[in-house]
Image 1 (cartoon, helix red, strand yellow):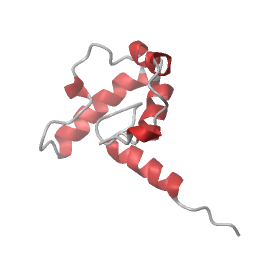
Image 2 (cartoon, rainbow, N blue to C red; image 1 turned 135 degrees about the vertical axis):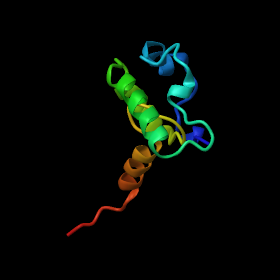
Image 3 (cartoon, rainbow, N blue to C red; image 1 turned 120 degrees about the vertical axis):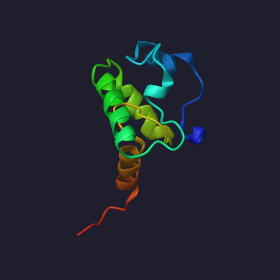
Amino acid sequence: MANLSRLPKVLQSEYEWQYEGACVGLESSRFFSPDAERGNARADREGKAKAICATCPVIEQCRSHALRAQEPYGVWGGLSERERFEIIKREQRPSVVA
């Protein structure tokens, strides 16, 4: 479940970018995996979702939201669950001072 405490207060203006997304009106199943989806089926669906994201005028806002909220499921801002997890994990590592 996404950690909503990291999100700004609910203000319509904070989320209006979502109305401009290339995904508006599309089936959510294009971006979120069904139960037990694995392997090539998952990779194929994620690739198609990322292709939609690549055309999106608000991809940066979507990606920023997904990373900030640590969205646990689906393709957001052109990133899969695993890709977001890796970015978040990398950003949380303590920096080494030489």
